[in-house]
Length: 269
Image (cartoon, rainbow, N blue to C red; front, side):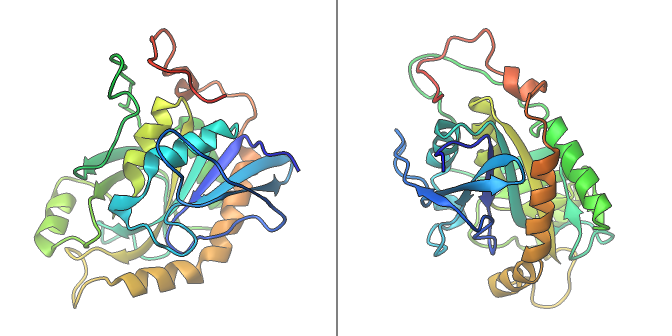
């Protein structure tokens, strides 16, 4: 099997495998090793690279994930389109556990994470007004609805630092701002993909209502993992469908985001 792929999948909590017949590739990057070895295999007619975001043994908490190494490793293997399944909490009472949200906006509430490749050697500005690939989003929404999944085609993901969950006051503040879902890993993953001119699509599975919506003790990590595990087969099927729907030739703004800019280094090819 070849050690190249054009689609990458970064799996989140409870999503530690996608491909069955794989070649495992160890990739070194200027930013250290990625979260784990990368598995490359075929989904339909496409070569797909799978990387477990937290590592297969879940050793990296959200604020310690080597995000820069992960995206660099995928690009160096040929990946230009990234799908990112993850578990999220809902900030809206009408969006309950089991819903699939394909957000179109993002709010960063993290702190201290390395969030750019361009921190030396010259100034590079990337457009990030629309954080997600419109082509990937359309494919994901269509695939979700075709599979009779309750699919929300839009909304704002607010990314918190973690590893703790939100307080009720924070959660109510997020809701008051009109945001839709809350997670811990969607940033800087998304902006790093944009800085490498890669397409990025978030596939957010709602596992719970966040603390400001829910009554009782609030969400626990064990509950999140258990709910995601119960839906992982369905998520794998969805990812397979989205991979098959992605165009081979990209015509979106993601591919052109670095056009005309002088980069301080060569990007992986």
